[in-house]
Image (cartoon, rainbow, N blue to C red; front, side, top):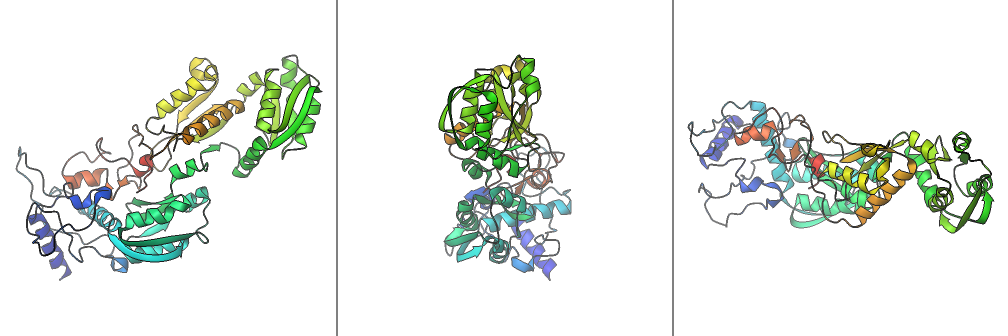
Length: 446
């Protein structure tokens, strides 16, 4: 009996001329529920598709395998050389690909369905609530929770709405925590809203080879206010005075200093009263062509040449900088505005490379250069984020990747083989040039 009902529903859908590609009911966030006037017939081929009352399963009544019932009806195909659009998937489409497309449509429909809700729950309880309210499987991205510094067992979300799409309700509830709901081929994932995190100064970069705890202490030292006043103080005495005010010891790279005819007792002129440590160090060392960096859990004072020979690696994420559209443009900006002669393109030793944009990687750049140059890049990105508003522009250049990967699902549609097959065109060997960007490239946030 269930199979017969599925066939009847599929045949009726085909007769009404419904297509996955054309239906206004399934086009991103513009979906606003049924649009028929009360009492108006739904038998016109020019009217929007109206999902039947129980067209999609909800809650625990999901069919085996997690997909809505699969229709076995034949989809009419226009004759060869005909300009008429297809009215459904091609006849040679594999059954599992049709199921994937139907599942995508179901998730998208439920995600934009209007709900009536008024409750306050812990974040850890939100996945079960979403499943009960909309029938959408939901999970928490624990890695994203750690990055966003959110404890699901204690964080509280408020969901209050009357006849508002579930997508909007979740966005409002998660925004104070810098989180967002991302629709994937497996359901909803509550993850970090990285653009919001970056604007809050969270998870904007990461040192390679330096732990998060050590990084936190480094930042504390760099921003700590210190006091030292002298017109002529030996370098080693100045170091002893500053070291008393910091978390880490300060060492002299004697071998590098002697290589340039310098010693530990060279006189230094320092005037810093309640001044940040980073500023004091820059003022004190630049006149002697010296610099400082962090090595082996210590601040090391060395020569500029020696620092360039021992570069540090750091990943910079581009969210909220206005540079996500073109990674090459971001790299060019850094090379022309921050120590231009230090980069490999002009004969220096500094290098940079874009992070791979496939999978779930964030848009970013891996840069290898001296510690002092890293501090200048950090200041540049802070200035860019302070003056950038709005959403990030999707990255244009992205390597080909598996169209069935979890990162290839956008607004409830597959951007690769499944979607193209359902629409009746395109290759199934990779992502389409005109297909939507993956959630990872766009931020994936609805």
